[in-house]
Image (cartoon, rainbow, N blue to C red; front, top):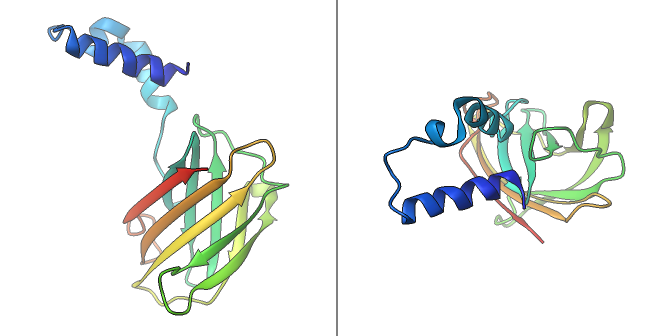
Amino acid sequence: MKKRDNVLSVLILLVFSGVNSASAEDFWGEDNIKQFESVHDHSSPQGGQVGMSGDLHVEFVNTEKGEYRIYITDYERNPIDVSKAKGFLIINPESAEPEKLILFGDGILEGYLVAKGKPRRQGDALSASAEIEIPGLPKIIQSFYIENNHSSSEQKVGHQGEER
């Protein structure tokens, strides 16, 4: 069982057993709490939108020029080797004219997959769905909704991920 599952199990047990006078720091120790919090990070190091697919972080970044990048990191935010990854990205899958793009390893040295599509105007909202297969890992299926302002603070509108 992973450390986060153990922590969750103990916290649930404490709540149901009526132990509520001790803080998490008292129970686990301040250093352990800081270490646990620092391990699971949902920040967006590339300035995009981050979602989870199983234990993987999937970060979607788009540009005005119609370039879409997908960065994949593990639970502890270590880069995943995408050199043998295969996948596709569908821009606005619910629209009458969805744009289906192939993801390829243009950014292998930088640790990302890229797809090139139609340029977008600043302020255009878009939805995107990605399906990625990496040998040895579960298939990644991830969806994003982004208001396309091309700045890191403006791209985080919503995400949805699942693992199959």
